[in-house]
Length: 194
Image (cartoon, rainbow, N blue to C red; front, side):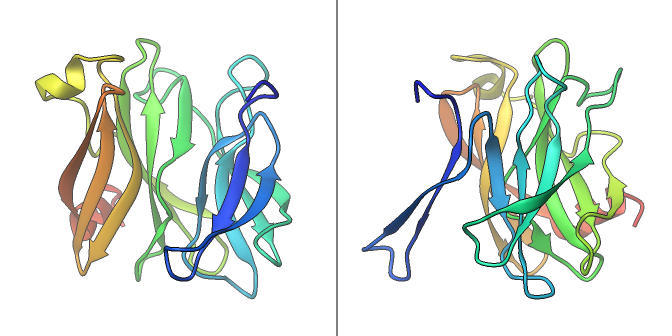
């Protein structure tokens, strides 16, 4: 909007009627992913309240008692100089609950504006605790439709379906097309040395 990028919430129980709750995180904020269930009676969400111009593009964690009013904001993961996620990082879809912890597939970009996907593993009971993080991307642009387009060398996820060990990951490529890829939860976890 002309007031900046923020996060609004709409809820539904039947995918036919929706209730708008308005802005839940004010500008400048995006890349919000709400956990699929409460933890210790609280809702949790990953978000990115920062900007390259003021501090950096990092992944933050917030909690809420009602899913609408958010607080207890904590910086969870920062960019890493000289690595594949050196300039900006942000959450993708809702974290996936596994026996090892909450698995978050996130995006990261480097100085050349190449976007790849990596993973964070968060503690099941204390999601502010990062157990492990990808040293190398779990997925990177390699197909023509990922390398060329409106904004080439970009893959960016916002959704998935989990069926046992299989994750069907929905992602945007080159800011132009929507794609799907099949990944293995076990393979992602093993890449994190868990």
